[in-house]
Image (cartoon, rainbow, N blue to C red):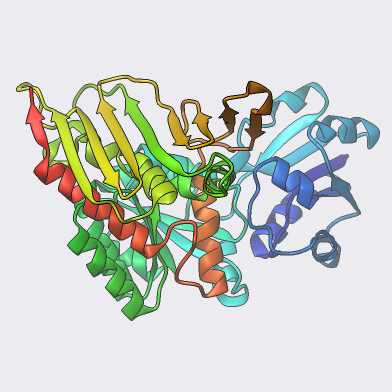
Length: 447
């Protein structure tokens, strides 16, 4: 029986070895396909640290592969299976169902992960791997774990929330090692945490982690007041750990290029920025619960505020907010924040249960930039001029849900020993917290 398996095999560890051992036990000839850097990039795999030749050598040194080949392009698996007369395609169970289409060509086997094996090895031997714990088990936490598969050097150890039942379900669903019985237990087992709990709990959990010397990636808004943001940043500095707010757009390639193009002078001086983010939300959900920090501003404003601060800076002269809050609602459902800068104006619009065109328009003295909805997942934008023949279109990848970009930046900062990133500066996080606090407390409310 001829068996084939695929992988990046970056930072080769005991989890890789165990997978190859299991794959080899399925037959008498094992082919291992190692992905190239270009293919990893094309499929959204980020932060691969070792060269292709180093990764191939690691697989060969394991003594488990009869042949090593290279995976270079989408669709190659079907060709490889037929060319090499493969009987069994084997892959880790975290890809369950992903490769069922190959059943038309051979048997597909999903190999269960041996819990605890890779984590133990990583603790003792591989300083390049980051052990991360997930705090919270809601929708975005589930997406986070799925996205982390695409970032090299990340090992999600386990999770904790205030509901033990939810934690067990979450850990079983994602095949993690640890369903922590307490936050302290989770912190004992990890180097860093991703906090995805209700907004009002972020500060408490982030401070507790940093006091234990753990790096923190915290969902937006990281804090609801500027004072709390400063408090968190001071704690991070004192503990010498990374503290990063998880505004995924800030770290995506398309948005970074958009900011560079806009600020390069290609459309002249920027005079206006208009950014909108709305979504339809109903029912008994956190977003509509004031006690959990709900409302369109707390839930969505981080994205349009990111666009404003990246394009116009932090020195606004005036800020006015208007919010719609019907008597039947516990929170405001639609808000507009209007800014005046020394040489420009801006507006940031948010809505829950209210739907508007979620675009971004940047107006300049020579032309303007249009980013269609959903602009916060920047894949395409167009620079437009009075003479339409001068228009330019830009296309960029935005893989998956985009969380992999913030995970990759977080991991890179830790490995490089850097506590700041130009993609989202500490001062910009403070500015967003200051604006959010002002918008929520000083808004003119009607309805």
